[in-house]
Length: 424
Ligand SMILES: [Zn+2]
Figure 1 (cartoon, rainbow, N blue to C red):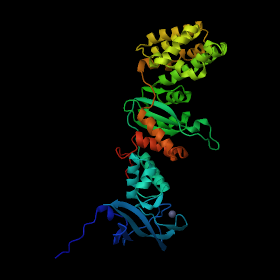
Figure 2 (figure 1 turned 90 degrees about the horizontal axis):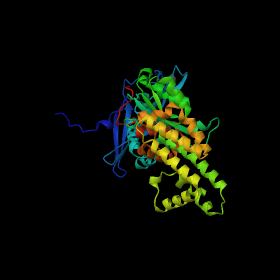
Figure 3 (figure 1 turned 90 degrees about the vertical axis):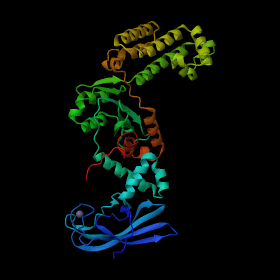
Figure 4 (figure 1 turned 30 degrees about the vertical axis):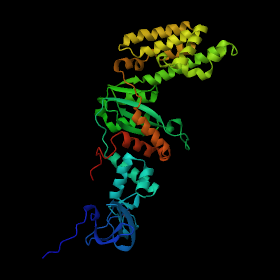
């Protein structure tokens, strides 16, 4: 009669090149240790260069953490042979296929699990949950994300937004200000992050288009960006049919800067001790820049008092409201009329900063394209929150490559829900 074999879960016996020699259970520590031994016909490869190894010269034992099972922790203990490598001309350790290359004390199965957990919580939390060193968790996560990236293919896309994200405060040696930013490319239709590059120079976006390939670049019709010229340069070079659209919110921001200059000027012109002095002070800046419909009770009274006392502020207020309303136009011609009116009124009010600013955008196709496509770059709330959270967790700005990968993991396709892993 055949002896009934004890059932062993697959993940507790699948170690390429090795077989399980012994199980050691500790009921006190709730720990299973698997002791492995190499299979007889195991051919060894160099851990460094991948070539077949020659004569064995020694060995050492390694214990690696493995997956938890039924509340028990587990580990594997196995010998690693040191052999002659003809290619390296040295004695090298053999390659162990089931451990994580960046962290030989963690099995690949466990590495996958850590990466999977890090999709839904922070690496710090994963480290606590699995009782694994924080640095090791970070290395494992980064290693697997980079493997994902190797097989990553950017999905078909026609409308994209390109935005810069301020990632880091301090410059390292030899860096310029652009290096403190990340370039984030979002699919405007799915609102998923397609790509994140270091820096915000032209090359940062070039990399995305190169990844996408010449043919797919031809399909891109609309690119929303802020007024950052290197992005336009990159689009013009790679995407023959794309139209660049300046982002509305960035434009409003620039308009507000010009408007604020006017307020400052007006404040300089009046008697600070007089009735207007208080009403125009810098602390009310936001009140003046705000759209009128967003103002509340006391603020409205404040503004009405200013408008009563100061004619020029009245004119500026009208220009501002007109400028905001212009974005609601569905037709380019209507918008053109409104912007011309803004320009004229600003001219009449001698608002030099506004005149100059409107002049600078008036003839730019990228501005008018907005009224044709009505797209903006502004990242969705979700993406912005993820970026903020990642930034707060220390690793964010220290390692920009990892930061970029994490954004793609959490807001894009670089995760277990979408398999892009190169088949090998
Ligand atoms: Zn070698």
